[in-house]
Image 1: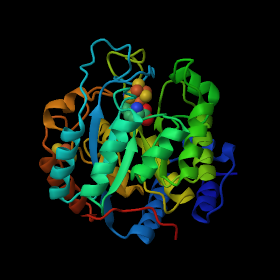
Image 2 (image 1 turned 45 degrees about the horizontal axis):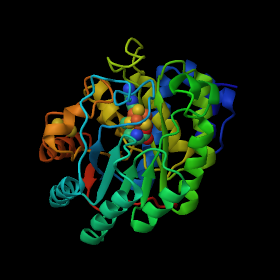
Image 3 (image 1 turned 135 degrees about the horizontal axis):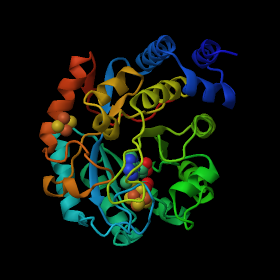
Image 4 (image 1 turned 90 degrees about the vertical axis):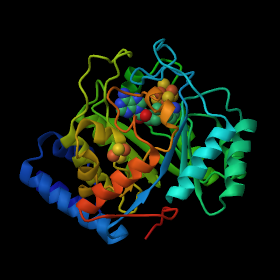
Length: 348
Ligand code: SAM
Ligand code: SF4
Ligand code: FES
């Protein structure tokens, strides 16, 4: 058993064993990394060419009833500045985004009781009415089957809910007792069953994570086959219990992006803001390792810095128009092109 064999398996569409994946992550050499990267980049290009999909991210609320140990929005963080956007503010972000060429809006926020099903369905329904050709993605945490279903029926197309870790013991090191991996997994299967294009995903280098845990995450992705997969490095936030933990590694994140691309060739795989935060060329590197989506920020400039999940988050001082220009140039510089259009998942 060697890493080269594992990479060959990935290239041939065979799912490696857990121990092979863990070994690959822990011992991959520079030459093997390049082999893996090239295979993943080629695979992404065979599905998407040199086209990169964009999603307009609207951070609708910094209130959260949960207390995830890693996140700056956790309810116990008394230093967090809280804000929420009402329907009018959200619609004005969409209007701005539409003008800038976005055809997917991602509404993301903490688990904020203000957004009841009635309120949320009103917002989703109005976006659907005003922008019939746009995709609406939600990322609002766990809401239960009935709520997910109502949101789908109101016109939402996609839902992002990272599983965070596929290992129950590790999950309990990242969350208070009130949150369980079981509920998270049930939510993900419910979203898929309802018909959402569903996004799972995890942080790389979260406290207590082992290479075996990451191998379990990869096997979970290959089993669930989500239409989207969000991964990015864990980055500490100064006002959380994990304030002194190290950030996740760039290199491991890149290797994981490549492995995910090979395990699930058609998956919509973002090169995340967190990756751009730990390295100035992080998002470009993500694309070169097999990612095919970027998510510029469409949130109102005055609230950007208050959606503070982790320290030193990039793009908090920039207007949406600046971010999109900046990202287009970054993609051009590495031979890729941002395309407008919904960018739906397609199995080929
Ligand atoms: N509240 C919703 C939820 O938890 O699904 C959506 C918003 S939440 C802020 C979105 C994602 O941010 C989480 O799934 C988590 O992976 C990521 N995140 C939170 N804190 C982070 C940190 N310190 N470093 C990197 N990513 C983080
Ligand atoms: Fe709330 Fe999501 Fe942050 Fe957890 S990760 S505290 S659910 S915003
Ligand atoms: Fe936001 Fe570069 S992407 S300023």
